[in-house]
Length: 133
Image 1 (cartoon, rainbow, N blue to C red):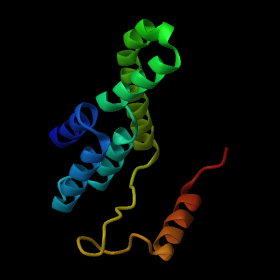
Image 2 (image 1 turned 90 degrees about the vertical axis):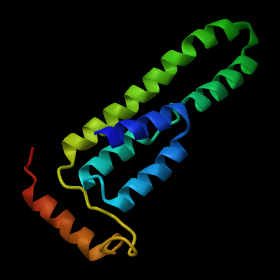
Image 3 (image 1 turned 180 degrees about the vertical axis):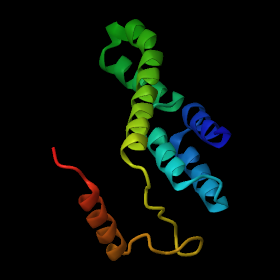
């Protein structure tokens, strides 16, 4: 839990690219389950960090100089909304996918990341287990 919290903190305060780099390091250490890795991947995927908020504020202020005050008041709300949106996507992915396929490079894992037969078998199993509407 602390690992994921740190990654989200790095993403919001610094940058999502650095958070993804650190996620890669964590995955090499095998500190997270495949399900947790999938959920945190969704949670990190956005432009909801302070750098992006600053860029958005600068661009929008140049596009509408008369609305600069309103934009500066709303930028933190937009940042919060972006974070919540990603967390909701991560939560939905966690609800819908029980056992994600762990995809690791050959040097650190099983090397079946892009083996189409594994994915086809997985999809056939999922279709057989699915219920009709």
